[in-house]
Amino acid sequence: MQATTHSLTADSSKRMPTWYIPHGGGPCFFMEWNPSDAWSKMANFLKGLSAGLPQRPKAIVVVSAHWLESTVSVTGAASPGLIYDYYGFPAHTYELKYPALGDPALASEIVQTLERANIPAKIDPSRGFDHGMFIPMLLMFPEANIPVIQLSLNSNLDPLTQIELGQALVGLRDQGVLIIGSGMSFHNMRGYGDPRYAPLSDEFDLWLTNAVQSSPKERHQALLNWDKAPAARHCHPPRQEEHLLPLMVAAGAAPEERGLKVFSDRVMETTLSAFVFG
Image (cartoon, rainbow, N blue to C red; front, side, top):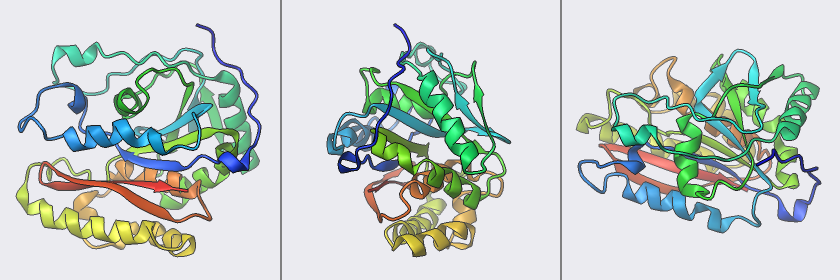
């Protein structure tokens, strides 16, 4: 297969939403678990999420918690490989395939768009897709027939930087591009499976839901100060908030639209949620 080099044109009547999704724990959806249905509700949610789209995406941009760079980077390969960046899982999970094409032309367009917004950016011609991308994509778009670009977070972990990254990309939504932030609304490795973290995750999830569903102006201020929220640092320890930050990009790319919580479940004693904007 050859890389797609389509020319994207704007159509605001079919503006794509932006998503912030949980990508689970490693390859959790493709292996046995105890209890066996631990991740079932999340898997079913991801499988059905695309049904609400206004049209089939022309391309998808995924911002994964598992890629951070000091200069925002974009995958530029025509056929990116997979990065199995999880450890200690069953052998078959390292044989999963997601043969989606990249889109070098769109990658170049994204870099140019970011630079016009005074956000330094570069193309990484060799990086593949990490599991924050391909694990949920295997559920959401299993046919792998839509070109995908992966976009890094800025490793400074500053919420405003990530929001501005999303704001710079808002125009892609009118070109049929779906922007997905892939992370986890709770991500403290010590907390998973510990019942003491259940009420803490509930407390933070309630705050996060109220913040996302508030007016865009109020949401912006709340997300800038997310670390002051109830139980925030129990749910995302200092310098480990990379799984929350894709939410900032997704929210930034919907600067005039309210967000909506579209999924929540208790998994491994923690509450995990998903949000849609637009």
